[in-house]
Amino acid sequence: MDTEKQQYVTDYVTDFDPRAYMDAFYSHEIKDSGNTVLNVPFLDNLNTTFIEGDIRGQRILDIGSGPCINSVLPAFQRFEEIYLSDLVQSNLRALETWRSGNSTDMLPVIEYFVQSEGISMSVKELNELVRNKISGIFEIDVRRKDLLGDIQIPAVDAIVSSGCLESAAADYESFSNCVRNITPLMKQGGKLVLSTALYQTYYKFGSKVFKTAYLKPEDIRDCLSLCGYEVLYEKQVPKKVKSADGTAYICIVAQKIV
Image: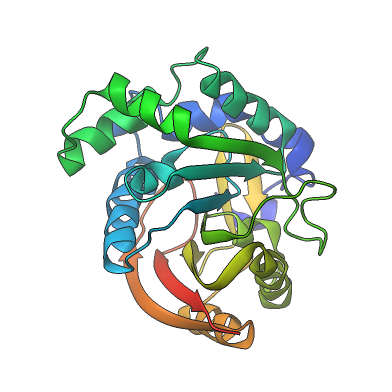
């Protein structure tokens, strides 16, 4: 696609379609699509990141969940309370529908996770286990200092965010502001897990094209250092997909030290 002719969306709240997103990236047809790299290696590397970064505790918050639970699947044996959050109301409704037992949309990604990680339980059993560990689903806007509005949650032991902060930001400065805004939600010594697109300006699905902040690995490391984190682990993974112009993504674990 000619980037100069792309029509970017201007409002996630009105333009993000959870049904189109799930069909594009997390349906049973993903193995035959050009988007497979966005989810299969992503899931593999995120699980490895949880292991290598020793991500565990009582509470974990997923920031920018979208309409899916992919980012918290590696947390199911490591945390007792899982919180999901997103800016888009339709995504929150999709998550609530799944949590209430009225949606099977998560089953393909859970099935892949069970098979690839050798989980000793059925897809149905893992689906129920994760559903029962969801302690809250709420709106969040990482661009604001009062990102949760009137909602209050206990400080969490870990935050995971996959593909969210670079989508909420326009550049390095606004990306850094997003990191600063989410940091107070986590305990001192807590760990931040980021899976972030590198060298990317957009991603798309359906008929929508979404801008992202163009970031290099050193941008993310510098941002984390300035925001009071120490990087403990990182891995870069090549990314070649039809749905984005990024060439890699980075999985990184950083501990809150300030």
